[in-house]
Image (cartoon, rainbow, N blue to C red; front, side, top):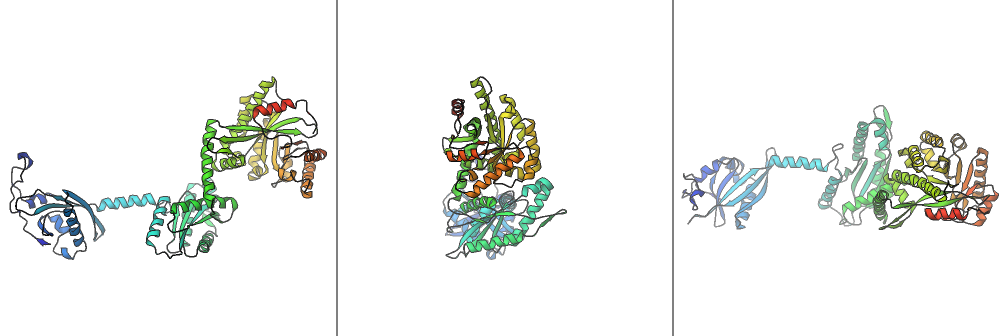
Length: 576
């Protein structure tokens, strides 16, 4: 490149309409002086760039005496030549150069000037300093991709960090990567009992401990409220992942001090390993999260296995459809008869939720109730069941012309007992339907009482104030003791079907059933046996003095109308 004089051979006005140019004559160099940013008039002839005119800002940034030695000089000249050769009237590009205070960024444009006869092509070059704009963009991007509390990458930033590692790290042929998901257990209790600031302090401390256990190249991120994840390069597959898991456990093994308290942090850990380096990292993250959900239930480290992600997607579909079904009234109740074993009389029915979805088909209660408990929909589902059961009794009374001499049992989830005002729910159910409390029985499990004994006690006495009978479901599978049974207002024990169905073949199961019957008699409680599927079982339980039974031997759960007809048909009851 060579310099040329700063004056053009002819500084007269360019050709064009009379009002398209100023009436006075101004040199090109004088036009450039008016620009507040670097500018230059450049000539291009015989594949060479020549300076026709520049302003002071251009000299300061681009073309000082030492311009040829500047690292960026060759680059911007080359970029200008590329723009000129494009034959477009204007082109733009961004230029980065290393300044005294760090990288500097310029938005550069090259525009073709009107051609003068007999003169080489002239171009206007301008460079707008965008360093401060890029710094703002960088800060905003950092905020977008990082967690403000722990300064770790967030879920979005985690994905970008993984992509960067996969693209720029050296990877042996047999290497793979893994995602380790970590869910802090009981974190919500810290927030509830000590406040959100203590919860934040706990998260910061956990983040520091986890980070201290990382290897070079590993990435730690906070991908949720109390969820962390680690991206790890695995040269030895699962053994490397388990080694990292052990380091996580070691880092969290000793208590964390918050205020005057020492808190031991428990966590659920799930791992997912990539099948190849080309596998979508987001899929591996989802697999690890699916594994950690299983770990929360099992209490062990879980490794993702094929099919778990499909199960998680199925649960998501069930949750979404269940939410709509509850809102649109698409669930129904089925009623299974409760039979007095000594007389054959129908004493009541157990209300059981049923769901036929137009997309999912028949969905098992075992599946959708578990999803409802996990998602929090169990409160809405439980309320619907209580209201609908009471309304069913009201409709039967209207058909019969007087109160039908049967009741309905409604199941209570431990999660609903913990989160909902159950006593108020039953009071509303009874009031809206106009039936008496002694016709609606609340069934709850032993685990619901054990989880929060004091709260369960208050609830049971509140239900007794409504004159409702109370049944303990699945008795024998939990940890109830004589003291709790004696002190709680329980009316009925329901022997779990796991003891009943095989009691004739299993001596230990028969002894268990006899023991429960003897215990109930001493405490003045009634007993219902679940899972009676043969006449032999019904007769055996009748001979043992069991009060009530239910099972497929008598009838399967049936719709509301069929249940009423079943009761009417057996009004003149027969013996078992």
